[in-house]
Every structure is written in structure tokens, then in C-alpha cells.
Length: 352
Ligand SMILES: [Zn+2]
Image (cartoon, rainbow, N blue to C red):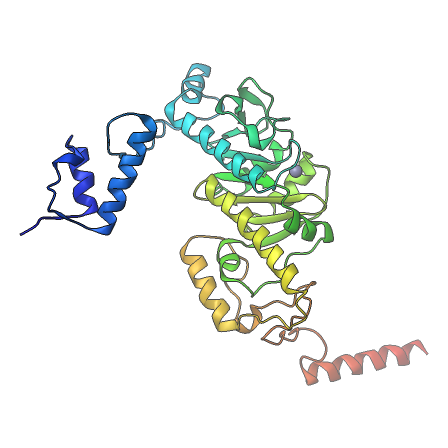
């Protein structure tokens, strides 16, 4: 009987130093094994080398002892030159490439940071396009913004990233850029309406910070104050900043998600049809998923009927759930209304 060769068999064969030519001619090769063989042959042809397995490279380990801004300079230097730090610097370059390729940054705009100790972070330099970052361009800063290492000068907007990390201890990475559709909402000073797409509801919790001069401590504070409840912050008349408790790529994903969302709803608003929204229970289900992923959101405690907000900008949209009446306002309780009327009448009578 012919031998069946699976993709795992092929990988195992190569890993143990074997050759593809040792697979018997009459063997039954599964489709995925065929794909693996083709991939290995293509790789061998392009490198001119023998067919070899590409075992995923293990990530370099974090330094054994946590560092901080007061750590001896030699220790900080050794860390900054380590394989672990090099990997993080390369991650920043990769995300920079993606930001630039997607036109989320313009000129030398946009900046990123990764927390690497109690009060230190690796960040992007100033005056370099995010599309042409190199690992050797990166800087090490303390949480006051003082540059500790790196030959290029750190980004002028670093204070905002650091204030976010100080205020939100879970934030390990931050990403800031100017994606056009999301920035349009930031220029209008409004958060996009909710209850329309699941990806956006699960990954992003969007707040709006008022405008202040980029790089000023006031700007950083206004953004940092929102990080308790929001992971995606529209900076009025400026752009967007996101944070993640996992890694830089996730902070970057939030940019893709908010930008795609803003673009979609702008187009949807032009279709001349009412836009459908989630029901309260559907929204609640998404928030349960979000909570299980450990993402912040100010709506966790809300009742289902309160979840679909009636935002400032909602062309053609009527929320599937009627907005709840303010519990404390007049009209909420006929007894209270009567009392208010009686007091008002009394005051008016005294004034005569
Ligand atoms: Zn900016």
C-alpha cells in the first residue's frame, strides 16, 4: 500500500536533515503537503541553497532584571543593544512601513513608543518618515521625556505617549498618526457613531480630546485622562492615538480598524438608504467579547437599551433602541414635576 505523506511529514523530513528526493514515487501526497513541497522548492530556487525547513525563529527573551531610568548606564546600553531591544526596534520599523504604505502618515508625521521598563520607553526619532525608519534610528527615553540613548533626537510628541503610559499602567505600546477619514472626525470634533460594525466595537473604544499644541504637556494630559476608558483617542484638529496592553501591532490594528470604519460609514451615509444598526442585545454580546479580551470600554456597566448612543453625527441613522429619558430631569417623574411647578409658582408669587 502506498504511503500517505502529509505536510507535517514533509516538515519533519526536512527538519531531521532529510531530502525531498527520499519521498517514494508511489507515495500519496496530500494537497497541503504538495503546497509545502512547492514552497520549499521555490525558496530553495530563490536562495540557491538546499531545501531547508523554516522553523519559526524564537522571540528573544526580555531582560532578566526589570530596568528603569536610574539603572546604571552600562546596563541600559547593554539592553538597548540586546537582541530583545533589536526585535522591538524592528517591530517599530515594520509598523512604520505599514502606516506609511496605508497613507496614515504624511511628511515626518506619526510616532510610536513601546514601554520597556518601569519608566523607560523605546520611541521613534523626530524628522524621519515612518516609511524609512531603521532600527538604529530609535531612541530610549525616560518617562519625563529625557533622552537616555540613541543617536537621533526623540520625537517631539513623545510626552503624550509617556503621559499615556504613566496614567494607564496597562499600556505597553502607543501609536499616533493622521489617517484621513478618522482625522476628519477629529477635525469635526466628534466620535464616529457606534453600533454598526463588530470589528470596530470590539477593538476600539473611541474618545475625543480637545485641541492643544502637539507635543505640549497640556495635550498629553488631555489624552492621558481618557486612557482609563478609551484605547483609541481622536485628537481634535490633529489625528489619532491608540494604545495596547499587548503589543505595538495591536495598537497599529486599532488605526486600521478606526480608519476603515470611518471610511465605511462616510460611504454608507451617501447611499441614500437608512443605515441599520445593532440592537441592544447584539451590542451587549460584542461588549462581552471585548471585556473577555481585556480591552477598556466605558459602556460595560450600561443596560442593553442604553448601548446604542445617539451620536452627534449619524446621517440617515436612527438607533434601533430609543434613547432613555434622563432619570433626573423634569418629565421623568410626574410627582417631581408637580413639586418643581409648585416651588416655581411660590418663588414667582414672592417676587411680585
Ligand atoms: Zn501628530
